[in-house]
Image 1 (cartoon, rainbow, N blue to C red):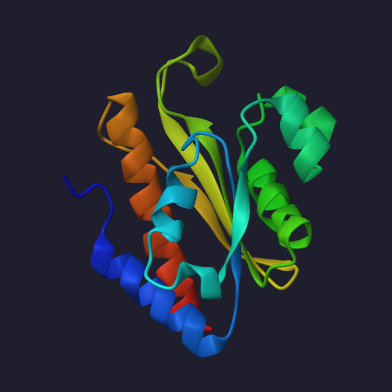
Image 2: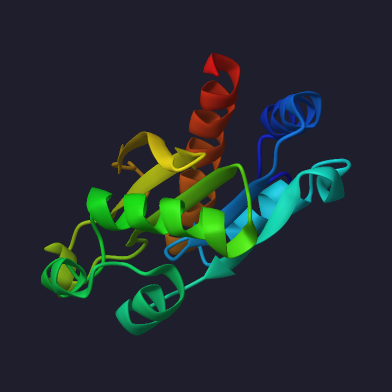
Length: 162
């Protein structure tokens, strides 16, 4: 079973190697799926610095430096939080690119029983792209894979536009 879009991932790897740049990942809702996708690219050791899965507010604050007052107000799910995660993972892993995602893969009261995610892609200290993913699927594993593929699509676009 192919979970991730291999052609898209191969393009990411080729671009990072050609540009001699690195990437690190900070994720929550995808629980390591983006790290799995990026690390599965051929020659990932040439560009993949590593990643962190911080699943709750305390860990996002402690390891990724998210601003705690805002994070508590939004249950750590917002475009601002995703941006902070992407920016701070750059320094954590000494990387050129930082990818981050936070959101909901299953309906909960804190999300008004909706599923969605916010992502951000940072490059050398600035958020280059961020946004919200509103999926049509509603099964948790499928959503995590969907979120991963959408973020990788956006990252591939950022690499091409650089």
